[in-house]
Amino acid sequence: MDRLSILMVGAGDAANSMHLPAWRNIKEADVVAVCDVNRESARKAAENWKIPRVYGDFDELLEKEQAGIVDLCTPPATHAPLAISAMEKGHHVVLEKPIAMTLEETRRIYEEYQRKSSELRLCVIQNFLFELPIMEIRSLVRRKRIDVLGVDIRMLHTSNDAMLSQRDHWVHSLPGGRFGECLIHPVYVLRNLIGPLKIRDIYTAKRGTYDWVDYDELYAALESGDKFGSIHVSFNSPRWTMPLSVKLYGKQSILTFDGTNSTFITQGRLLDGYLPEVQISRTRIATDCCRTALQIMKSTGKNAARVIGGRQKSGHENLFRSFVSSILQREEMPYTTEEACEAHKTFVEALDRLDKASASR
Image (cartoon, rainbow, N blue to C red):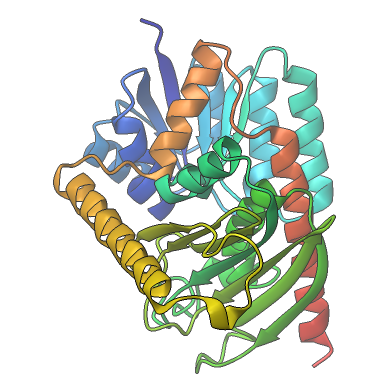
């Protein structure tokens, strides 16, 4: 059986809590080296995950290790030089989101990928597309040929968010602050569901108490042709979403995933024809309510069974499996590098608008 060597670059929280646990479950992949400018962090990660080789210098890693997958879990400002160097040396690349912090850096990464695309694969992390509820929504839209009218996305965090609540965290130096790290998630999910995006308006507000934060609420209105979408990101919620809450409105069905309690429901037509509202019978309304309640119970039961049975796979694991298969079996990824770059353009435009609005206050 073909196997791929994984070279982990960056030994911080993203690597230890998301990437390394995912790679461990993929039998076709072996993490053979870890590299971090803080060699001690790399050494600890190697010890915890039984990784045989440790590096403190990226160039040394590329020089000594055979071609495989370079998994970049480093801050966005480092992505362009590291990704380009890895591809130049013949490595496939997994690139954490966001791709980069400027469109110029994104262009350079994409151009290098195009030069190598016949030999190499570039996987931009869009892990929310590979979370089970989002995959279910995408599958239902495709299988039932739902004519989508619009999509509302909510990404909720509590005020003690690990990044936002740390005054000296590196995310506060990004354009858009904490939103410069997380806003890309709902952007690429929305693009995948309704198509290329155009930003209509973005609104922000500050409802929390952290004096190092300019705003902690964001609402964006977007469009794609005759479809509409909205994104609301909050850091003041009493609960958080896992990963998102999504409501998709179609002509045939409404699909709703509530990320605060992991329940999924579908709702079809309440009535055939165009009877006025007053003619909807109480029995029909009650039946519809019962049907919705049963879906919630069924969804809750399935989630509990997956968690208790250890069958709950993360979006990162599902994404990495797809990426490994695309390399070994020459299969297509469910989304293209071009699509990831287009979503990134919308993301960067949103951050530019946020920073201009913040500077004018």
